Image (cartoon, rainbow, N blue to C red; front, side, top):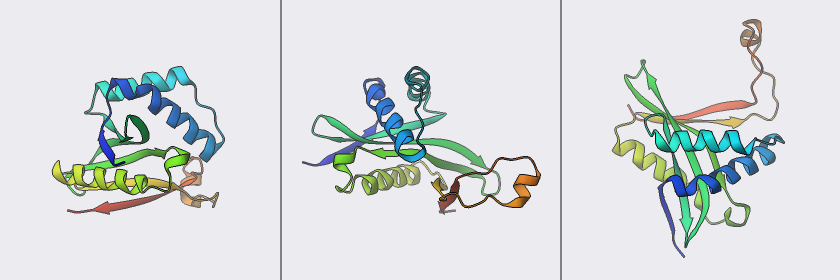
Length: 150
């Protein structure tokens, strides 16, 4: 059965919330408040200028999601998309859905003349740089990856 990737709509909110809760449990050992999360997902779906969700659908079942937000890069004079969260249900992880979501976002970004995509990846608790600590910033658990076209 083929996987179809499409922009999320209001009917997908419940599934996206469940995926975000599962992702937070798996990656950070945190429990996210369902009501707050629902409001955030609904707000993003209602206002695509802020960002968007894309969902991967297999048959009638939503099996994965990716959330993007938009940022302006003055250095490159264009928009960059941030991949904020990506999740695929456990039983579908070995079906190429992560790659499919990434390729879909990449193609959509290119079609919309976005100049690149970025995402953060967990850095396995390596210490943050001393420079940022001295400025009062907290250590981060993420590394940034990007792919720019302009």
